[in-house]
Image: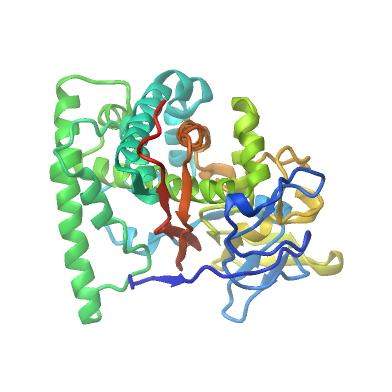
Length: 433
């Protein structure tokens, strides 16, 4: 077991809205769905119970926000700053080192986001990254066809790495980038420091992993771009005066956001599609916008990151039960429980825990708050949805492709994110196109 995570068996359950069983079902055993009830139900439960009040203060003094509108108010407020995600460790860095954008707030953060927004627009995603997605996805699918069997998490991580590297500019790496990143990311935020034998071991291990990623991936990319600039994030950071250490921090931040989370979402989306014949037929028959609508609804239902945290820098008023006002004091931490906010019936409509592509949502987009909101909203939504569709649309076109075993579910406690592993795909090696 990896520190800071828990792994749970695949559990049965029941959807509170439609009453469907939560056990894994083979595609061949499912009657075709497709009605007002939708196609399926939430499969990844992070625990806890829904509270009647959208905002409540826990016994530990941390505020928990389960309401959609209330969460968006917190995320958009200028009276809060980033919390969690290892920010306590980052705050100990020397003052001369500029923090990665994830850990900054205020005018400097907004200016950085404004300057880098062009790397994530829908047009740029389509024109600059689609070809990379198609090439890598097809190569992994060809490998699956040749071998007849593969783990979905391996295929999706390969894709996520190459796409994120194209955006960031990590295109001059030495062999072994996947192994270096896998060593770096298993142990997440919140790990203890030099206060125990485990903490000492973890600190030394992670420092070694930082050096491996720097020497094998970041330094070669920076050297190439100091000679000749390219149209990518690393070139922008060089022009912005960042040191190599600061560029390393930014690269790892974007790697976590662009590689790790996308790998998990691809697995979650595939799990839904393989285990619901009606949804699968709907997805296969749809055009690209229709398929993206399906994926957006799956992402709303199964947000990869389940907890976003902020800390109040000024008193912040939020609505409480029965119309009362709650005031979050300065210094208090606020946890936004995204899996709850995305199931807030006031915003997402009826049967919020069921999968209904194209549902009408009040003042909200298809993925809800799965990518956050406000100044720290993740800019990679268009990239994540398109690369997932590019991969899955080709994968599901393979004759005879099937899910031989469903994934196991693990959780990273610090941010409430899920990890889906051991999902095995099979295809008859004699099938060809």
